[in-house]
Amino acid sequence: MDKSTIQQISKGGKMRKMQSKSGKTIVKVTKHIILNNLWEYYIIDDPEMEFPEDSDVQFAYAIGVAQEFGTISMSELKPYIFTYTTEMDAVDPAPNWEWVDE
Image 1 (tube, rainbow, N blue to C red):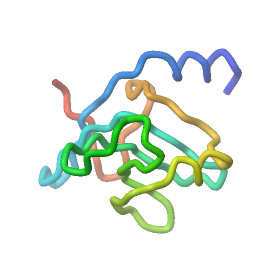
Image 2: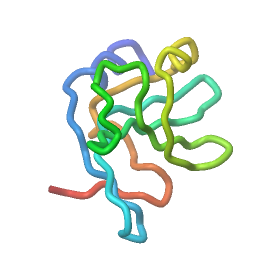
Image 3: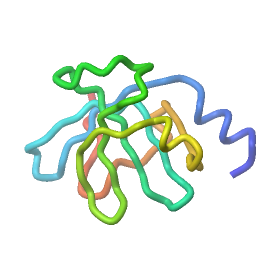
């Protein structure tokens, strides 16, 4: 991916709703991160967690050895970030999930 493409997908900031294929869970995804080891993090806006957007601690759906929800530390991930975007139109949904059209 060239530098102009990286800049393009980093602009904007559109949240999208992602739904599990079973239809039981819907989450609001605000950011997507891929680390150097190819683990992916879908940062979730969850009002029950009450983390400010600029907080170091965020709630996420992580895809690595396992797929799970949990809290993450952005400062711990930062040195290993390969890609980061807030433009969810440029991101595929997680495996076994789909984007919900508004």
